[in-house]
Amino acid sequence: MNRLCKVLIVDDEFLVRQGIKHHMNWEAEGFNIVGEASNGEEGLQQVELLRPDIVITDIVMPVMNGETFVRTLKAAYPQIEVIVLSSFSEFEYVRSTLQHGAADYILKPKLDTNELLEVLRRTAGKIPELHYEPSHEGYRIGQLMEKMLSGFTLDEDTEMPKLREAFPLGSFRLFAFQPESGLKNQDHERIEAQLRSRLPEIGCAVLPVESRMPVLLLNVKPEQDEEMVEQIREWAKESGMETDEHASVWVLSERFGSFEKMGEIYRERLVKLMEFCFYYTDRAILVDGELPPMHPAGYQFNVNMFLQHVKRNRVESAREYLRDHAASLGRDYIADVFEIKSFLGNLIFNVTITLADMDVQSSGLEESKYTYFKNVDGATSLNEVMQVLDQFMTEVEECVSGSGGKRSDPNMKMLLDYMHEHYDQPLGLTEVAKHFHFNPSYLSSYFSSHKKEGFNEYLNKIRIEKAEELLRSDDVTISEISSMVGYSDHSYFCKVFKKFTGLSPSRYRRKFWA
Image (cartoon, rainbow, N blue to C red):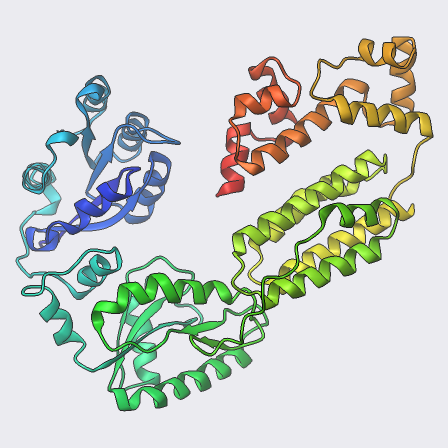
């Protein structure tokens, strides 16, 4: 039985991927663009998930380049054919990919749709089990919707009539909801069937977008719009009562009267509305235009004052200050969720540094801070984030009150303060001993008697914690960070960093920003 040839595009340039996807009716030619990826590592994940027949890949990409990608891909999936995109200057890399099993290549400066089509046809002909043959069925509705959502203008004579025929009624809304248990976002037909069984008079289609919930286009007669909204409200309330407190909040866009506005409404309204769910988990559904009036931007959080509360053993005051700030964020619901999580993650980091400066022994907190980072990052609501922070502040309170740690003598505090102030300088046991008029061997014994780690290990810990903070800011290069935290040898810095964190500096940064 004939089927469409499945194609995966791997290229770090978004416009190249979109250009290939939308500049031809590929299905009419017998091809189905099943997915895309921005580097070789993502490409391998997509290959495992989608099992394409042909992969089109660039050579120069971040994370994993095309040469490594092709070598790894062909070793694991020798039956998958590969077409390489390259520039003139990369031909040596192309030669390497051909040696590792790539079927063909195209020079990017000469890339046009007809040439790509010819190379794809030639490559598809090499796959015996495919029985490649053009379908000549024309565009599917999903293709046209994806093209519009990507910002492309549809042809008024050949493409728009198909959409108007599929959605003839005069009122539209976009709707994102949590389908019944067991359904995945990819189960488009079953998701549409679920909605039609609940709202039989409504036209609908699942949008081809990546989202935590499936997004549907709803199409009704204008006079039925208000009734439809009320039916969806009731459905959302019933669903909320049947699920747990962490269930996703449903969202419904404003009404629009022209299919051509779908892309704009999705990008500029629905995506933001879905982000607002982070603040409104007490509601079953958010309807655009019905959100409460937004307060002026909340007051700025005074980090220094917060940390002073911690230093002076006023942890409950610090906790209340943090809760007040969270309430302010909830009122100013337009605040970026990623920025909020980054800020609160950095706050956890700063508190642990403050405890170290105070010489509060908090080994348990040092070990658990990465769990707190992970839980803040994975939280689906502001309430969930604040529960994590509340647990963290309870552990901080135990540390500073004495149940979680103890304070050392003033001389040791003075020594630690000096190390924290000068960690970025060539700092060794001999230099510090000279500064405090100690014998180096005595200083080493004195230090070990007050700290569980030795002098050099503690200095490395300070430097790596500062390096982590700089890596989380994403403002400077890793080699610059190495010098900024006191390491003259970049490779030694990387070795020490991996010893303390389990990750290389570059992987730590990628993991945080992912």
